[in-house]
Image (tube, rainbow, N blue to C red; front, side, top):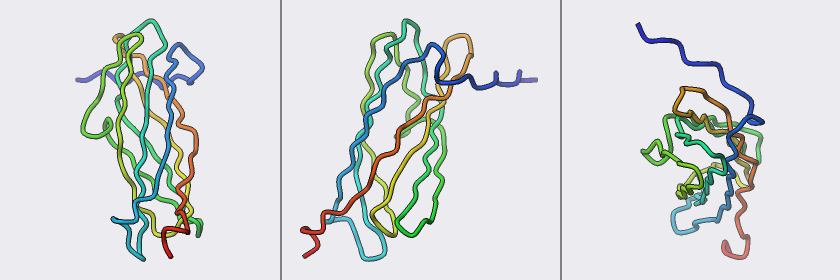
Length: 134
């Protein structure tokens, strides 16, 4: 019988992963029913122990207040292992029906002892450059 997962700890505990996200509009992949945005996330393990990114959660809110939740294992098909001082950078994309929109969320990280913590991802905006639409 598998043992239950330990409870999530607060992000104030030892893991210090910084997340930097920036988004840019992709007009070539956008349509009137959905605007496409690419974003880049950088995770840096500033702790002295190794952490694995177990899962992700995103809350995407469009300009009409509609919310979409996205959750799953890892990111971009991986559960990256971040040794002390390691950096992991990935890019992804999202399509929203009505921009501007915003994204925020969290990652669940786990260390070698099975301790887990939740690392918050600060909100960032998904904005269409109106000059590109004319």
